[in-house]
Each structure stands twice: as structure tokens, then as C-alpha cells.
Length: 244
Image (cartoon, rainbow, N blue to C red; front, side, top):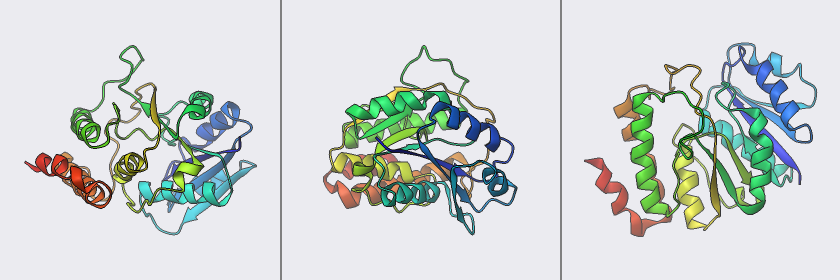
């Protein structure tokens, strides 16, 4: 089973070397691609110092979602069986990658969850992120039928065969909402794995004007409404009721 690990990066020079080293130790047989989303620091230079790491660079910052979409394109074009996504901010534990690779044997998407197992160690989530996750998890459960507990964890495994079915276009942080809706449309098998809740920097910024929680909520609702209207229009009322 050929696997590609996708690491989206934007100005991550402080953590990049450690993350790449830990990923390589955890998954020595996997290939790695760093998608540099127009970094203005030394991220690309540092990534290039690691042999066997492919680097794809956006000339300008295009967004977290677009970085993942670019990485998915690499997985499809390279004929891989599995794609793993892991963030570069040290909020995911690379040593868990083998768990995701094992779990994908029985699923199309394996999604990390910071809320699935209350016994897992974890930092307290920023209150606005917790509220938004709870709200959108409830909506996604109703819309998709998946009993998910975490809408936005970036630590995931995908069967590339399943990725080929998805039409992902949202360049910012709302892109995972497209994944959930389209997964339901295509009846993909989805499971969650519990992962530690780690917040190295609880005040870390959202880009694209999304730092304000209400602005972020309105944006997420727009993305979700558009996606449901396209793929699952009979369930659109479940989104529109959230606009109050």
C-alpha cells in the first residue's frame, strides 16, 4: 500500500524541521510532500534540506484548503493508495500515523477527533472553537448521518480512490465541510480515531479575516449551505435553520 503524507505549511520555520523528522521516523516507508502556501519565512529552504521530501510551492498564499487540495492532486497524480494529512504546527502527533494507516483498511476516510474519547489527554480548547465545533458537528450529523465528533481536525487518512470522487474547490478553512457533504453523497465509509487535543498556541490566527468567531461562523454556514444545495438539496433546510 503506497502512502503519501501531505504537510501543508505556511510560515512554519520554527516547527518544520522537528515535524519532518518525526514524520519520517513514524512512517519511513511513506512518501512526503510539503505544500508551501506562499511562505515568507525559510520554510521552503528548511524543507529542501530533508532528502526525499517533495516540495510544491504556491507563489502566493492561497489558503489552508487549497494547500490540501494541491496535496490531494499530488496523491492522485502519483497513483498512491492512501493520503495522510498532518498539520505542521505540532498540534498533531506524527507517531500516530501508523494507527491511521492501519485504520484506513476498513474505511475510505479516517478522521482524527479531539473529542471522541474523553479519556484522551488534552488541552482545553479555545471557547469559540469549541462552540463552533459543537454547532457544526450537530449540523453535519443531521445532514450526513455520520456520528462524527470533530468537524475540523486536520489529521486524516484518505483512500485516494475516494479522493478521486471529490470535487473540492474551497481554498480556506471551510474546505473540510465540502469533504463531509460529498463523502455522504458518495456514501463513503468514515470512521474517527481519537487523537490528543493539543493547543500549542491557542491564540493562533485564522487568516483571511476569519479571526472573529461570528465572521468565521457566517463563512462556514455559507460554505455548508452551498455544498448541501449542490449535493444534498433535500437536506438544505437543515442548514438554513442554523442562520438564526
